[in-house]
Length: 171
Image 1: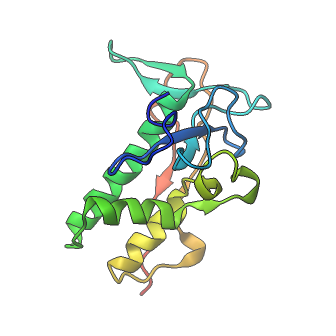
Image 2 (image 1 turned 180 degrees about the vertical axis):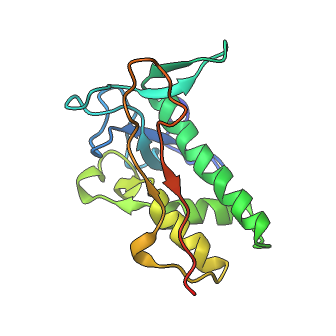
């Protein structure tokens, strides 16, 4: 298991493990308190309608998958959004500062300390709040970034599966 199977840390490499939507380690996930840096959603819990993550496939359609191969893009995508926000607002960044943003805004779950470093789970809400603070934009904490769960569709139309809205700036 690369890179989580190695005991040494690699500079610039973020090792991602998988949890379900309830924050429980996925049965297939790599884990190590010394070599898995952060956890992110890689499958849904057994009590949910779907057991996997909706993803695009090469023929332009969607399919459901599970695994660290689903969790890693969630982390990469969150950093991509952070970079776009920082560029838009003229906030300088480095690879090290992005890694710090990721880790400092993660939720630390003491029950997962044997699964990942400090039990870190990706927390996009906290990351978005930190980014708004960096840009010195006041936000209404009650109206912070919200993502609602996907709405199941019998027709397979997922175009409106997620509803999201950015934080509202305070007057």
